Length: 213
Image (cartoon, rainbow, N blue to C red; front, top):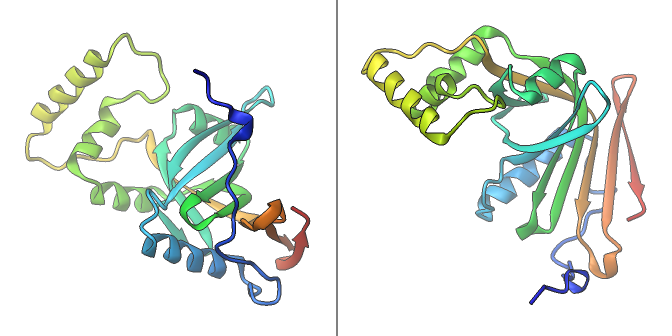
């Protein structure tokens, strides 16, 4: 029996968001909301949808993990040769989206993207679990593969090769930082009259406004 998708509905009423109390710094407000998401044990609170654009102008999205906020920029890591890596190199802008269902909250971010320094990427790579380090070498991310067995065989071969030795960061792997020029906070409210507060950076200053839901 097919579900009645159109009838799926949930009323939001946990919190409210007011322009007079949100503050004038969207990064600080994001960090406060993020800490609340962690305290509420939101599953993968640092999971965010990353949207990029192909050379032909088609949008693509996938979920990645936020790995830090540094100098008011959002940081994540990936394979530079992946689809998203190539798209970001060709068009260095992206959109990020966090959805914390347990808190009935969403944060939407748009910004300019740049690669992190090789040193910064290396520092983070060294902090990763050993299996994740080997995985970065084993997977030609986004490239077609004939089977999962090929990947697992490659992983075992690399485990044997490196044994207990230090694993160097692959040249094709590293970090990006997103410098936001737009941040929108969304709080679910009753009757679909949700609260939306938008920050837009103009001349290095954040302008704030309320949006209709």
